[in-house]
Image (tube, rainbow, N blue to C red; front, top):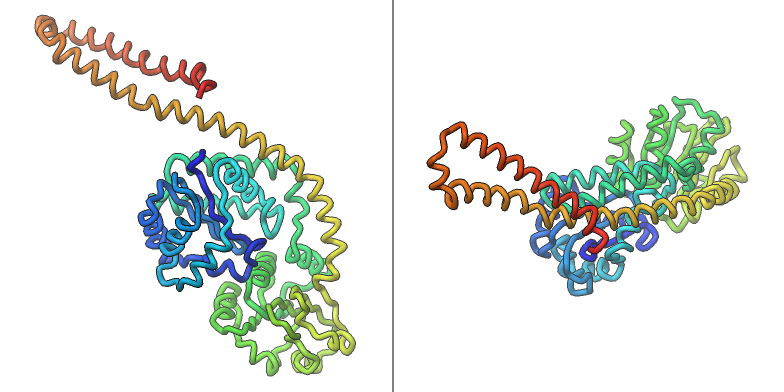
Length: 408
């Protein structure tokens, strides 16, 4: 297990916005990953990429020091500048052996996720493994690790309530929105196409909402989200002139100043005097405070979700001990799995060698004696030797697992 290692980037260390720098497009993924494995002389490689993390699972005897990481990220980003490689090296978290294994179990169990308790991460881990397996990047150790990781995560979700009260701004804000009984044909203006709004939009689409208009500073990113939602896309500069009406605004940008000023909101609302909903998940807020003083708005924002978040966090904390216990048990079980696998691999040559002895005995050592036997006698002798061969192969395997494993 000493050769099992992980290079980790998460929302906790580099922020969600920077995760995108480490995402690989589907059309380049195979070539880039195969190149990394070859140039860094890795035994195995797996690439896990989600909206809030990128992780590289490695099997290699190499130490993950600065020299290795520089070589690794030069292979990962062949067009990267030195400053980008330095950024990756400085921000990479590295784990080896059982700490790496424990981390992966926590990831798959969603204990380390942006949205704690969501089961989607299991599918993401499984799909990442299958993709890398298809490319010939993984081998026996990562196969065993992933199999046991998925089984552990399922136990966590089944035997604890960690998934019952997910704690995230998006899930809490959506829960608040549902309480307002918004109709499925409500008109949504979505401002910003980053991870938060993309995640929220998936909730909306999944639950039957269909009427979206997307605004973003970079039009191409707006168009990408709009394509997923079957919506129209506009540059953020066009927001001040938009007169298509709305029922709900969902906004989350990285702007340091208010995006929705009083003048812009007045244009957006037009002559419609009905109460609107604004979901503002930005920090600081995208909605200017003056708008709240001048218009009838039901505001859902980070600061007014704190009570719900705190209550859910307490519920989640009650489950953490149970989750950690399951993970600890599975780490111990995996030690035994590895021991068993070592025995199986060490003895995998036994059947081949026994067959060779069988063949040599009949065709070389006792060839002269065999020539004096009739066909029926030869057949009986072959049956006897084949029976002995099978028993000879199975018995050492059984004895090794029962006796030798504890000594490894």
